[in-house]
Length: 220
Image (cartoon, rainbow, N blue to C red):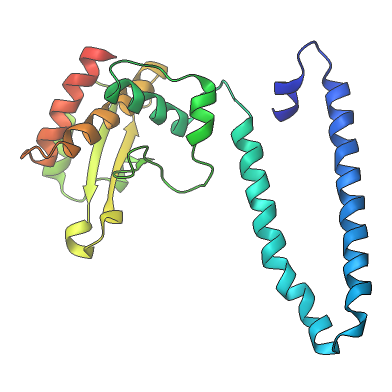
């Protein structure tokens, strides 16, 4: 995908060859630098020479992670995944139906494997229905609320028991027949839910779910 982004006229082989050449140059420079450092520390104590790899590894690893992060930010992928959908939905809700361009999404896109939320709270997680409900009555209420939908958005708030906001999440459950529209509507409803909850509404979670569902249907 990275090479395809830079290939403008079916010159994928040319881009790949240049990329491999850059890797070889970087590896050669790194090897030369390592040999130079090894030669420079010959006059120091043996204990320091033994500790040098351990001391240098965290620094080099942090630099490597930073460079990879910048590389990912530079690539403007035009396909949608869960996190990119959330970023677009958040902009749509908070900035008055505005769709960000790929470059804007790439700058703030989540590059970790942890559940993500553009607003920082109520991260979204795609789940199975048995992970969301312990109480049959709770399940029945949500089935009635989403009876005309191909998905369900279920808030889970364990912050009262743990005292941490990390105990909050939104679980998104899809039906067997759910298509792209249902998936996009579910992500859009999550953005409306966070916006309503952030306004300090004195509504319960289920009331927020119902209100955000109506807003998602009106604006999907």
